[in-house]
Each structure stands twice: as structure tokens, then as C-alpha cells.
Length: 409
Image (cartoon, rainbow, N blue to C red; front, side, top):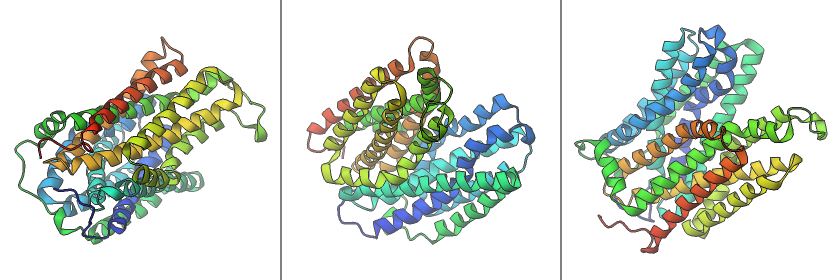
């Protein structure tokens, strides 16, 4: 596949349609993060196993990402994408069956496989826009997807409160079903057709990524960023509780730690809706180097402030971390799209990059609670912020050779 700034279709319309299908498909998954812990006993699931169910979809993607990329490479995006939306519909229906842990476990595993395909389709849609538009298209894609997540949490939560958990699931199931005809109606461009199958997409994908210095360094940056974000997101409420106490903070409207933590997590997910298009356009306008440097500087500013700030000012500093982290997610994703189309097997590189970020996301909470025994949370944040900055600047050094050209084209 060759990169071109002259798209052969209407990229924004294609990306918006793919984002809509993915956003509809993800609503059931998003709803579970808020409701499953509350409903576990009634669903026949022991509370300690809730964490397993919320994590297994990420763990299975360590394998399914590269296999999904091989399927897209072989058959093109149309059929795998439609099947992925059907898979999302089936798994969401199983969430409402109340048949116990193992059925939920199978459903969450199936969702992980479906998400691998849905994300792969998103990257393939972005490829059609040319390099000069990939930042804004990435922002558009994730803005629509996160809008689906936010809507799923809000509508599902409302229906649950009014009529019970089953009503929340079945209400979202109706909307998720719309994703299937949307996926079937998408006019994928001719160049998205498949190519002959590879001998081993898992092995070849990693070989392609690791033998190229820019790809190898971007993979390290993506993994480090997702681990950093996993650390901060999984410990933000504990960090605030340790630094501010658990009671009322003498703020307007009797805001307390629980409210602040909820607002911070909501800000992270809505950042993809509000800020992703802006950050994407910034990437297209300023270029990869300046955008990454700006975001890293803002991130380090926020981390530095956490060490000496006390009181309510901690909240805007953590908010800055979440917004800049969202920006890094968009920017690194756009860079992965740019690098992939310069490589001989672009689908396989996207699968490898997605696997790297999923691995970091899975490791982040484990690292956070291991380091928490030895370090204060702000010191752990700063340590991994420095590691992230090093990984980003290590990647930028590979850009000295004429915009990251691949030596194996």
C-alpha cells in the first residue's frame, strides 16, 4: 500500500460512518464498567471475578489484534467489519442473559476479538485520507467512538436506575443492532480490497515492526503511554484521597473526593470527544514533532506541579494530565497510521501497534499497585512520565531521516 495525499473516496464520510458503527458497537462494553460491579451478585458472579471479566477482553487482544490484521489484509475490510458488529451484538445480548461467570467470560473474550476488528477497520478508513489529514481523521474517529461510550454509560445507567439492569442492556442492544446495517452500507474504496494471505501474520507482523527503527520506537512510545495512562487512571481516586482526605473539601456544592474522581475519569473519556478533533487538526498543522514536544511539555508541567501543589489545585493538574494524555493517544495513533502505509504490510503493523498499546494498558494498573508499596503516587506518576518522555524523544530522533522513511520499501 502506498501513501498518498490524493484520496480516492470521501475520507471524512467514510471515517464518520465507521466511527458511528464502532460507537454503536461499544456501548454495551462501556455500560459494564459502571454497572457490572453493582450487579455482579444478581448475575451470579462473585465480586472478585468482576476484575477478571473487565480485563479479559484486553488480554485476548494480545493475540487477536495481529490475527484480525491478517484477516483484513486477506479479505479486505467489508466482511470482517460486518462480522465484528454482529459479534458486538451477540456479546451485548449475552451480558443480559444472567447465566453466570463463564458465559460472561466467553462474551467478554468475544468482545475482545470483535474490538480488534473494529479498531483495525478504523485505521483502514483513516488510510484513505492521505497523510496531511490523518490527525484530524483520527480525532474524528475517536471523538465519535467515545461519544458512543459516553451515550452507552448515560443511557444504560438511566435505564438501569429506572427499570433495572436488564432494561439497560436491552435498550443498548437495540442501538447496537443499528451498527450492523451501518457497517453493511459503508462504501469501502477499491484499494481496500484484500491481498493473498500471509504465512504467519503474528510472526511476520512483529518482524516487520521490530526491524524498522521508527516503527520499533513508535511501538515503545505507544506501549509506554498506555501503561502511564493505566497507572494514572487506576489510582487517581486513591491519589486524591491520600493527598486531600476523604471528606468534604470546602468547595462549592459540597464536592468531595468521590465526585472529583468521577469528574476526572469522565473528563478523560470525554476528552476524546471534545479535544480529539482539535488535537488532530493541531497535528496536521504543526506536524508530528512539534505536536509531540508540546504535549510532552504540558504533561511534564502537570506532573511537576503534583509534587508541590496541595488542596483543590490538584484537580486541574490531574485534568491537564488527562487531556494531554488524550492528545498523545490521538497523536501516536495518527503516527501509527502514517508509518503503517509506508511499510510493506500495513495491516500487520497496525495489529502489532494495537497489541503493544493493549499490553501497556493491561500492565499499567499492575505496575501502579506494585510501585505504590514503595513510592508515593506522585513519584510513580513522575517516574513513568519521565520514561514516557524518553520514549517519545527516542522516537523523534528516528525522524531525522526525511520524515521517517522506511528502508525496506
